[in-house]
Image 1: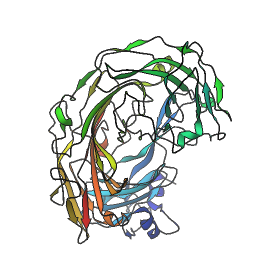
Image 2: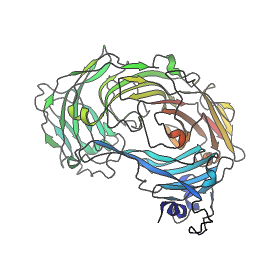
Image 3: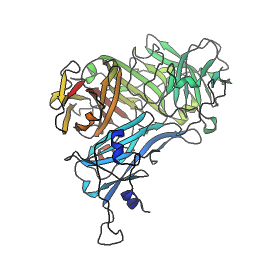
Image 4: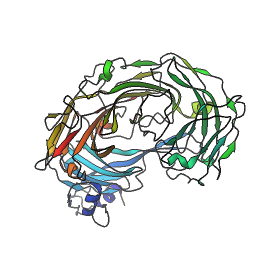
Length: 529
């Protein structure tokens, strides 16, 4: 069956009922869309009353030789629910979806419309809304990393017991990086071995976690590797650097697998790095709520320089070492193997121990972040400037949101948190808009804005919906507040992205480096009926 016709007649079901999906997935009342009933063989009939866009997964896996690969062609394992509607009408209708194809009526093209989709992600359902006027699009669901179906943990005591040969001293601050199931485990060692029980990687008392991906174990048959490093902190330079390392490709045993890879400790200089945009005081935050400001630069490797720059989630329970900022930073960071981390951005060459296998199979990366950390009802929120580059020049090029207004009430210049109350009233669209920094070099026009509405409770932040727009404004349907299951306290996170050049035309499948983001959290607000 041709793709156009197949997509046009495809339907979505949820528990046997389209309408039954709405309460589960937080979507609006369903309005049935008339199906095309003409004869596709009749030359007088338009056989393609739809244009077809793509909705796929952005998956970063590995090739058989262990090198990273990117797949943006595969549809999600679980078919997403997709709804569409004009921006002049709050009503949403079901958009036919099949095998990654989304069919949209031709009369949507060139007009302001929105697409609302719910993905099934590793961390649960995620609702995204795209507001645009496109007639061609390729949406990629939140990035997935590692093997789609990784090998299971072979037992409660499975792990690694690595005793490198040729060390000559007791190991101290050690860290283990793994590929396939991308993870890092940082722990203090007291002898010549690094021993770690893998199941604890996913536990409440974990010293690490899978960075982004499904929980399982690395596999030797897939050329997954493990890289054990020892790091040392220089208090004068405020840098944490690799001073020795051992590389291996091994499977986990039922008990920790005993291995003895060769240790090497011959350093080379990480080249000088040039920064731009980081010298501006107060994080360029303007009127965004301030917090404790800190910086961090990281230098090393990322699996590929064609993936979104900041998709690693925060570590849970990881011990703080003196080379990192003095507080837990819950902003997303790169999936990265750092050879050097510095609290003060490092510009001059610095000695590190490198690994040839990583240098030949991964992409060089230099990363810089400036963060402003504050607490919202017990949860840390972080406004930030971030940039990652595959060259030795790092530019904080993304503009940050300023002067944020929601329903004509200021959410960035007036505090404290929750001093603003927004009356929902009759179901409607409410305008959220903000000013942005001028495009004065090195700051540039962003490729997209991503706005996340969170509901807030004591020590708990949960996303309600993520909006994608091209300009510094978004329309919020008041129905999302009803979807928030009784919550009355909320906050917005507004982020600009540079490095998704096709986003303005609806194409999120291509990412380029250098990649930059600027994230601003507003003041919290409450809602009333």
